[in-house]
Image 1 (spheres, rainbow, N blue to C red):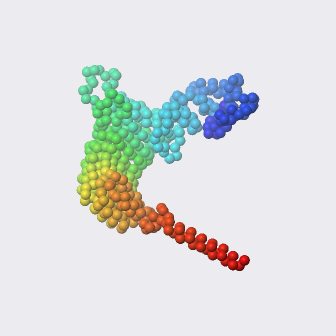
Image 2 (cartoon, rainbow, N blue to C red):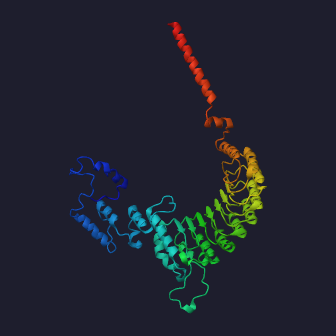
Image 3 (cartoon, one colour):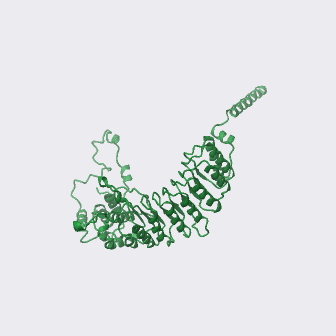
Length: 480
């Protein structure tokens, strides 16, 4: 019995009898089994099924789908070959079931966050474009030959994730004498590719190679300044891009400068992520130039980028400008800012009303930093989230922090993990954060009474209740 794909698999499981039911008396002798969907497998197949199977075998030569009745059409989608050319099936098939089968067959499980309003067709075609880019060989310069397939996939590609880019290898037709001693480190030209994908709103890219095994070489993870120039120009071709993440790459000062020269003309970005790169102080100054004039940027992530005092002060100076982007979140996590770098950040946060969330996790606080941080918390009235985890504060720094939180009314989220403050200080800060969220300050006695009811009050209540009952009984006895 053929089960159409439109029936949920969980529905079929409901009708499947359990092992205990099959062992009941009378089950073995029962002839009519309504729950048995294999009852007609040994029978001669229907002529319509044979015709549908013939259509499947000749689908590439004579595609026939919408002309079939609904039942036969569903059956054809269940058995349709998964290696048909995209040029044929993209304009013809929109059914999610077929694209889910195709995605599972070619790529397995979905391992990344699904975008909003996603469909299996969009997921498959986005992943197919990713595969084309990741397997492209730069020595053959075949970017312009991808135009046909990219034009077909463009309407369905809103997010592009590139986890690797192939390095240059000598072409097979190149003579041995012509092979250079040092291979070029340029990758494929992304300008021609991104120009064909105007619907992209999120681009994530890493310059490197996956699964290299025993062939590992450091050159595999290098990139040229030309690569960043091309990426910056390619992003300008994306008129709807909102998220750009260039992470886990050897992007240094010159690479960052070349990339920012393209991004400075962008007017649509909302999130910029350069985490786990090597831009340093000079690269941070280039980023500061971009955010000082960008109209739409909201989130800036510079995690683990070797940024020190100069870079932090440059970015924070840009925050104080009137033309600066209205950033909601700035992330300096795992950068060696030191005391002076943190001071530059704190001075900027006091003087302006951005960002709403600041991450300073693992930035090498010093002994004096905790007191300066507490002063900033006292005077700032805009900051809503602060992460200072993995910095040493100690008991004295915890006291400063508690004093600052007593005055602050805006901070609603504070990460204090691995800061060596005392549990009592943790509890005090937690109470003050709850006050900022709810507007109600609970006393320590109230908190303790909520956690553990007063046993003395229980005893008094029970004693009073027993005394009242005894008086009532005595009164009734006297009346009798």
